[in-house]
Length: 280
Image 1 (cartoon, rainbow, N blue to C red):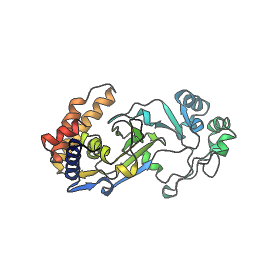
Image 2: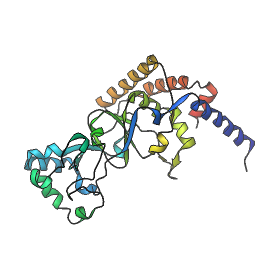
Image 3: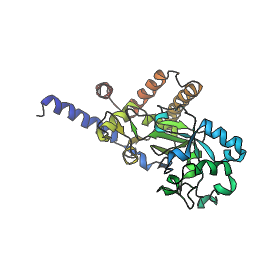
């Protein structure tokens, strides 16, 4: 049965939700693109560790041209990531928009070709593949992996939106976002306001984790702020990124709290409403 206490709390939440949405612009209306991480069809063949990477390069130095560092969902943290020395064999199927021809693995990358043959017949039978069994499926947004981007895992207990501008690729359990105002958007996505809002509209796995799916993320209402506020937030985000890239374990709680404080102001939340969000 619905108690009056439950109804009051639900009414309060409804008001906060409306306040967040009021005069906001949905994330999907910003100049951004959200895409899924890389689907290889057979990770064991195309995602390799540091040892195999070094071996392929020592057998043929050209191999390094198609080997890219890759991040998995579990590598991602709030604002940053810890690279676990995994790499993608980027034997892409060509990109028409870039006039980029298909990678001919057999002809041009013999060491990589020999590595992939170890996974026959499975690698040849996979669903996701390009014109040749050694190629990855078509990926129209392949160049986005090389751009500055926000990366997050689909399933996570907390918002863990990381920033990368070093050309890391990302695998299929993750999403990437490229486009405008990335550091401002990153701060909002990682904020307590956004965490609370997603709990209102999100879908859970039933195991204490949320599904941070593209269509849900796109519905996040984001306030349009002055360039002064945006610059202030961006410089705080830069501070966090700098500290985290120096050492993953550096504590940035104070800076994150400072960002949360500004975000509460942006959304015009009262002390009582902030308390509801923080005690969620």
